Length: 427
Image 1 (tube, rainbow, N blue to C red):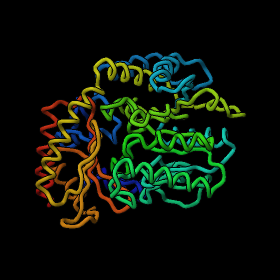
Image 2 (cartoon, rainbow, N blue to C red):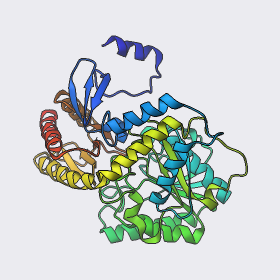
Image 3 (cartoon, rainbow, N blue to C red):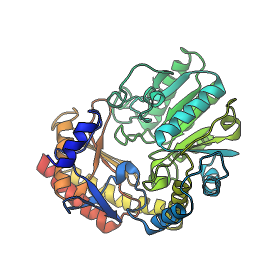
């Protein structure tokens, strides 16, 4: 046990989770690689939980942060803030939401908390619809709409939450249906649910569930939901904290796979936009964003330094077509992983899109989750020089793979080879 680990245990909550039997301290990074305090180098396939979106120590971002820090680090939203306005001007049209307004926070949790505040105030209802297997953050309101028991530590809640089918395609009561039948069944479930409850404020949903193991419904489910929601006046909040900024390859936002009936009413974002800097935010049409009847500010949301980082990072992602790279390299990577998985009876499914991929593990010969195997593969991958994540919801165990979007074909092959060895070693 390292001295730092002992110090961590002495001052940190017991529920503050760490990866690995012998936790590592990451000291620096470059590109898609990071180094620990012992000098070991790792290929990073998790990016600080999908946060290092472009690359470690990206010169354009570090330069923007340094230059802004040399001018002024903080002012709060009580003063005009040029970097904040400039980033909002970039994000508003990219969101696809008409007449959009942007409010910056410091995290995805706070962004979802704000979205729930807006929706409940606008609709004058504390009834929220959420997806089973979902994760929306760690605040009191965010855990109260999280449909994943592992990450929802209290049943006390300021909201009344009802959970809808549809976030998980290959498990649950509708798993054996075709995609079209699955959507119809989930829509019928939503219609039935709304017939048994008071007027709901909003449905909050991740287009691809992150912590839940990178699960997703068939394309078009939320467009079909939208028809029902609109009839009832219920808002749609798309939680894009993990799916935003082109990570899925095929779309810039996850909601665009469900775009037939228009954009969401509210969109939340965080993680990748700051490339490690603390940025979250909410986009909503003006009518919804402006519905609050009391003053509000954000002390640290929209900080000049984080906004400078976000501007530089977003510009880099767009100018270098990182969405296209996620589509191309992610397509090669998922096929490589499926080829590897075909040789293992411990892998139930390889799923995802772009550079947001999941490998679901089960006990060989069964459909039962195998969390011990997930932990073992995590350890074996680290020993081989690869960092990955893990997750999963109800009775699932999943390896989560989400590298920086600048990942090269050679690095994808390197990571896949290490994963192949790790799966074999853990099996």
